[in-house]
Each structure stands twice: as structure tokens, then as C-alpha cells.
Amino acid sequence: MKKTVQIPKEIFETCPGCNKILLKKELFENNKICPKCGYIFRLTAWERIELLVDKNSFKELYRNYTSKNILGFPEYDAKLKESKEKSKLNEACVCGICTIDNIKTILVVLDFNFLGGSMGSVVGEKVTLCFEKATKLKVPIVIVSASGGARMQEGIMSLMQMAKTSAACAKFKKTGLPYISILTDPTTGGVTASFAMLGDIIIAETKALIGFAGPRVIEQTIKQKLPEGFQSAEFLLEHGFVDMVVERKDMKRILGLVLHHCLRNRNFL
Figure 1 (cartoon, rainbow, N blue to C red):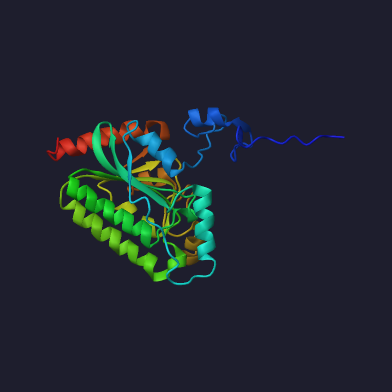
Figure 2 (cartoon, rainbow, N blue to C red):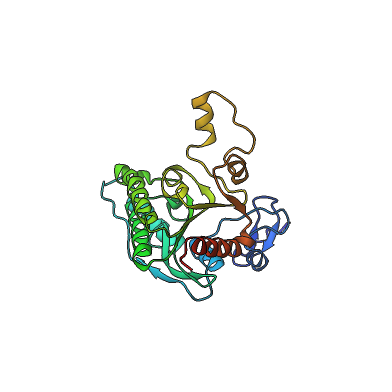
């Protein structure tokens, strides 16, 4: 009789790309990219922060901001509780002040593990406050997006965040300081349609899905077959929607170079 072997989740991870069993230690050492097939795992907000910032430089802001079920949407309270337990976060974004290649920077990172990284009123407020904080401190801002878009459980309140964050971004840009937007897998919906695509420099991570509506919805609307690779980071680069596509292992180095170049070019260094 065959015995079923239980694979300890704390030690091993199964790759969705090649179905190989990987040692988590090796996976993390390779920036959560499968060494066998190159499948790119999604990062949590804190994993992304660790990847980008100078060691021990990150100080979190607005940590205790949490969403309320202001519209009485069915099961929203339960979903918020579940997401907090799953992600160990209070909301779908983590923001703070840090240094990146020794440049003092405001950093905002969305986490797809919290209700799909969706933008509700609290995410919109935190992004807006970060633009205002960057203006006050006279430092650049970097936002890393990973989101399914506006949060449906907050209805019109979530859609208003698109205008709110875009207005905050426009006000910040009057300072001349750089806003760098990093698009990771996935960046879609109302986040794409607002602050994510408003960066002075827009960097996409390799193979990231980036778009507004899903491919199936678009095909049904325009009654046409979409081209191969549509909404991939590489497709968007080819068609001029992003400035560069960068591999995860190179992201911190490239981000540092971009920040130094922008600040020097605008006489902030």
C-alpha cells in the first residue's frame, strides 16, 4: 500500500509554472523566481520593500489606517478580517519613508494578497498622504503597484479614489520632484487608470500583466481577437506605454540610477 507523503509547506513550494517542488530557501535566494523554469512568483509588500530599499532604512507611515464597511456591503467585514489574517497587513498597501541607493524617498507598495491589492478609500487616502508627505519633505516618491483595481465593496467611494490620487499626483508634480511608478503583476483596473500610469518614469517588471479591462471583456467589446502577448509588460514597452521593462534582480539598481538621474537632471542633487 502506497503511503502519501506530505510536503511541509514551511520548507517546500510547488512551482505553478513547471510543477517542480522547490526549496523555499533557494526560491527566496533567487528573488522568488523559479530556478527551473523562470516562473515569477508574486512578492508580498514587505518582500518588495526588502528588495528595493537600503538595509534597515524603511520606517512605516500610516500603519493603523484600516477600512470600514461604510456601505454595509454583504460579507465585506468578513473579507477584511480574512485578508488581515492572510496578509498580516491592515490594508492593501504599505507605505513609508526610506532610502534607495542613499536617496531619501517616500515608498508605497501595494500587496495583492490583501483583497487583490484593490484600492478602497484607505488605500486612496494613504497614497494621497504620501504624495503630500513627499511634497513637504521635498523628496521623490516611488509607488509599486500590484492590484486588481478599485474595490467593488466600497462602490462609488472607491471610484472617487482614482480622481483623488490623480489630483494629488498632479499637485506633487508641480514641485519638479520625480515620481517613479513600478508596475508589477498584475496592475489592472482603476489603479492602472489613475496613479499607476502617471509616473514621470514608468518601469514594468518582466512579464507583468498590465491593463485596464481583462482580455476576454475587450474581445467581447471590440469583436476582435487580441494580438499575442497583449497586456504583457513587453507588449506595452513595444507600444510606448511604459519606459522600460526590468528584471526583478536588477530592479533596485535600475531604480537607484533612475532616481539619481532625475534628481540631478532637475538640479535637486
